[in-house]
Length: 494
Ligand SMILES: [Zn+2]
Figure 1: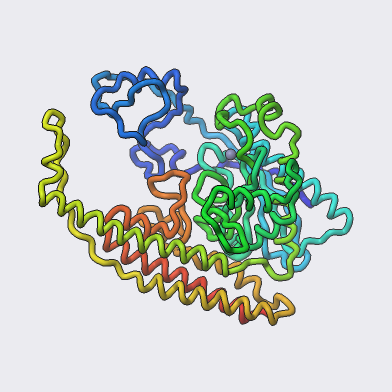
Figure 2: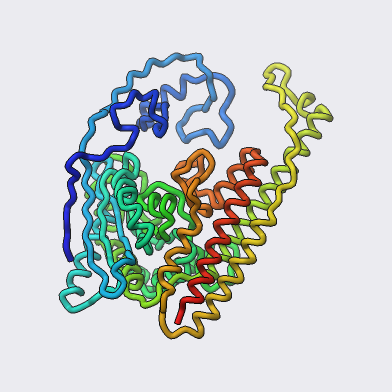
């Protein structure tokens, strides 16, 4: 294993950080944002007048929340550090013995807002432990078939800078060779959490079945299944569902921009919390209130390490398309239902306006802006998505049948890697061409939160019906392209 620390001779910086006047920068928000403590926030919030804030807008301070505007006026003097300085990614590489041009990438960031015991050291420590274990295995003669890249990213907190710059710099190689990216970020005591590309859902279920939960001594999978069954609606499928990825960590450039199948792994849910991104996320807190004896740190290293070893060691990459098809079908059903609900909502609202219901129920002493009628949305044509679903189902079944007959990978691996790539489109999502994946994206208005089938879902949510029709066709095209790659993989099996 060769480890290199790369310092860029002249640091590359985001377009926004170059010496452009801020008015010319298009990628940075113009509203300065500064998190402040509740003690500083309370007098500002308490000074607001106007209406009482709707329930979801209220916080938990012992005041009545108002929406403003005014009557208080506040003068804010905001000081920022605009220094340009280098950041450092640390990349270690284990060359693959049989498929060196297929890369399994494992990463966690190493920068922190303040002390960062949980975020990121608890996750970064797992990557270091995996690296130590791999080096022991290499000494014993272990030879992974695929190339493994171990990455510690810098500059994650200010905007995923290290991983994004690295992924953009190596975009051409990653487009050819990026097989899977396995991310973690923070870790703690409790349940395994798995999110990512649903083509890896079955694979990750298999890994979780082989990891012992360090405190309950059952498997990580069994414990998660018990909680899922205890708290959720009854499920009869064999595999636990994994979540879809939004944003908020270093997988973003890999999955959303480049279409490299990605996973995000962590343990947690039984530690205290309340320290996130603050000065209190320190070693004292972690060793008194979180994973005190680091047994869940070991479990994360075992989980991610085993995933990387299986991905890098398999003759045939362990992608599966049954759970993927099942999940995408849910997303398609959701957007179709969303369109029906939106339409119904507008129709009944318009009827209420016609019948004068809102005017009659208005508080005469506190009048609000009168609601206006909206054009009734057209029925959208979902046929392209329904046809793409049929193609995906057929491809998934065909792949299973071919796999049952196959004795070796043949030329299937490059085609399997191409499936996730096929789910991206070059022109990207409306208003944000950098985000190219058609199944997963962080929402335009939700920050970290994921929107699945994002182009379709968000255009419906924004009442952009013409755009919705275009986005249906675009997403369906990507799904058809993925189905074609799955068919090609099936044909390439030996
Ligand atoms: Zn983090």
